[in-house]
Length: 86
Image 1 (spheres, helix red, strand yellow):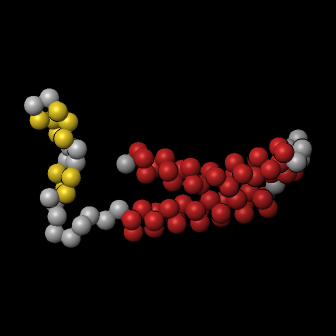
Image 2 (cartoon, helix red, strand yellow):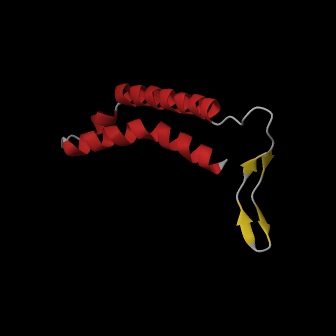
């Protein structure tokens, strides 16, 4: 669950990081008006779009095979047996 939360948080913050990098490289980062309402609103919408598409991708790509049951990983005789579908 933590992996999913961190992935979605990364996807949301990605546009902000890209914009901050662009401001830093273009030497415009010193001006406070660079982070005005306009860019922040668009960055928020882009972050939400990436987050929603990330949730859709997780839902579509993480499906279990039909008719199979998941067996979690376990230790057997001191050896870790990975999780599997049976």
